[in-house]
Length: 614
Image (cartoon, rainbow, N blue to C red; front, side):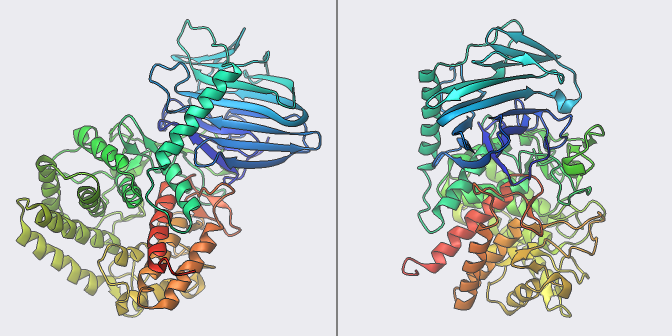
């Protein structure tokens, strides 16, 4: 075995957890039962100790293809051999009745399309990130695995044998038209392993799941260019929602490196206020309101219990609204291709990130406009937050990029404080809510003038990362997106021009791809050079699009850059957080930030091009 490229994966899920499936049929990342639960299969972070679940041909002379069943999150992996063709269908059943015996399971159906093929199945769980030993029992219908209070069963239509890693394996033959179903599920202590579903039962589970995803996607109101990319991004974002509470995770993985062999490895299996707010914007843009309702439910009924009045908002919470997310290192794992450390938890939970109020209040403004009127009680919480912003906007913070070595007066954070007050004023006026309009307006205008004075660097002819800095920052592409500044304002155009210079010349753009900040200044105190940040590239597309409304050459540039960026998606349209120098995926995967930015860029670019544009 060897590490599969990050981009050589698809994902399946059920709005509770996600599994990554490589093109060779191996599940090498799966946390159970929830996104942030310890992993059962983690070979993507340690090839020897992480655990895996693989179904693939015995032959080594195989070509792999992978695709999604159209308009669904059902993943199909195809194995092309000289002696035949085999398909592996992977999904987690959804859309079933709550009492269905097939709910909350991992479903793998392998079938022979042509010829006769020898297949191998290998299931080697590694409980609690490989830290807990487990017991393996062979039973008449498969095998069971037990580690302390967590028990799993593998329903198998073929006889299994135990291997030297305390897993199970088997080989079997499939001839044309044959299929077999394998089910991995939770198990009660004294429960026997379930018999696998019959062929009709398996087909019914498959069709029910397909119908669920297609019915959900039918709510999309986007019908423009790049429909397939927008649909795939929407389906990916839906998988990142946690249905029981409404939380949205930033990514389903931890510690996939931003630099191969380096320390830039973080745990993203939590719900960032910023990421979630942007995700809701993406959902609302294309007609999905229930996800916005779920997010507000999570804030009201889960997060609010862990937020003390009069204190700053923490940047992230667990999917159940808990703010205790201590960061630990898994010293026994080597990390993806030797990228240490492997981290679980995230110390950024204790940071002061003052931009959060802007993203949040902007989302509430849009929620009130497109989903449901904000209640009076909810407004009073927003009002308290805006008053808090008035008192604390001028404090340095850790910024949108979560600097672990410094606090600064980051320009992005100041802009988002302006956004918070601006949207709060608009919402109060729209709904005639009681408010401190005069104070909010006065502070909003003061923030604006300070940004223009201290955030602008006359030497660089650009807005810079923080006050008195000469470094550029791609987060400032958000200025025209939030209506802080006109997209054709000379200062904004000058900033975009400066950003588009190559890193060698002080800019942030390399072959159309955008770095977050200068890659070699070590402003974040970490070693190694990370990849380009996919969300920022889509932000550049959108900034050019908005400027292109009066400058057509910039609109053409935006379209070309967007089309080029689509080429950096993996084989099934998914993106990681970053892109490496050879187009490889870097960072956690798939990344909500990237997909929501794609949706926004596609929506605005398509609208600007108009129906008559070829």
